[in-house]
Amino acid sequence: MPKYVNPFTDIGFKIIFGQPASKELLITLLNELLSGEHHIEELYFLDKEDHAENINDKGIIYDLYCRTDSGEYIIVEMQNRWHSHFLDRTLYYVCRAVSRQTELPPPEEFLPTESGDENVPLIVCEPAATYGKRYKLNTVYGIFLMNFKEKGLKEKFRTDTVIADRETGETVNPHFRQIYLQFPYFTKELEECETLSDKLIYALKNMNDWNRMPDALKEQVFKHLAQLAAVANLSEADRIAYDKALDRFYVSRIVEEDEKRAVLEEGMKEGIKKGIEEGMKEGMKEGMKEGKKEGKKEKQIEIALQMKKDGVPVANIEKYTGLSAKIINSL
Image (tube, rainbow, N blue to C red; front, top):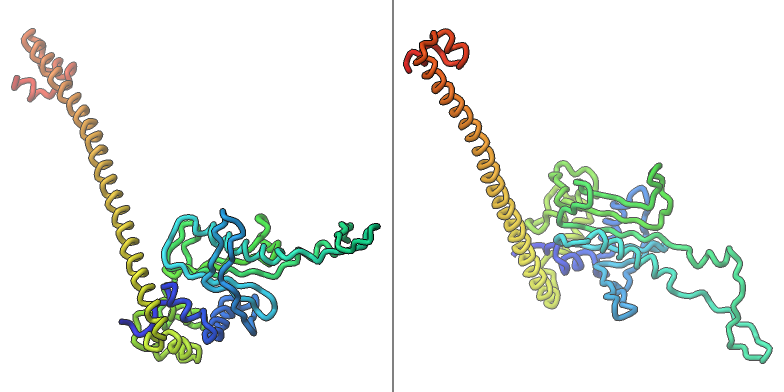
């Protein structure tokens, strides 16, 4: 059993980042990812479950759902393996968090009616400035840690998306942000990791194979990470949940490898089939070509024999058949 939990399991990720003791570590990771854009001083964990509003709505359970001290909302998702429409799912997650900000209706204005009933709402014309305030949004960040390659993204580790002008690239609305981190594209060795951000990503990618934290990771945050992620420090309930999550992780890996193998085998079969078909086509083409050549030569010999019987000089037979004098004389 490795010393540290695997952060690519759902329980392992939540043990490292999703408990009250993890808050400082999570803030450090988020500040590194948002460096130069936003700095978080405090973070509050929110209810991870977005309940369905009707029977056709499945609702959402986020891995982590937080709010910063300055009002931004942050969704953090760890996805171990690829599934179809993953990018659509991430879009939906962020959109749900955006829409939740406007779900509470503005206070109703009650004015007395002629009958004196003060509980009958009166619809009034709301000033434009007041009306617009109900749509004021705080920024929602969707941060997606992915242990797979997504075909819909460029072949690189980090992809940042914003709502921007297609022509100029300038941001139109800053309140909708998505950050995709494709771990298979993070290929740096420890000695190449110069920033704290790189070191954190390197640790998350490799810590499941370590018996201790490397000496090069001297920052205090890695001591905290080692304490949180140590399997020996898990409660009995967390250990049972983690063991089950680990089983699911390995099963998913086996399924993924089987799917890759099946695709590869199918590709090989198709390639062999195509190769045989192409070979047969080429063979037939060459055969016909050779056949035509042989047929032409046989015809030339037949004509040469007839001309020779008729006493035509060898030089003339050469001229009209294209055969050499040596072949003509051997007939």
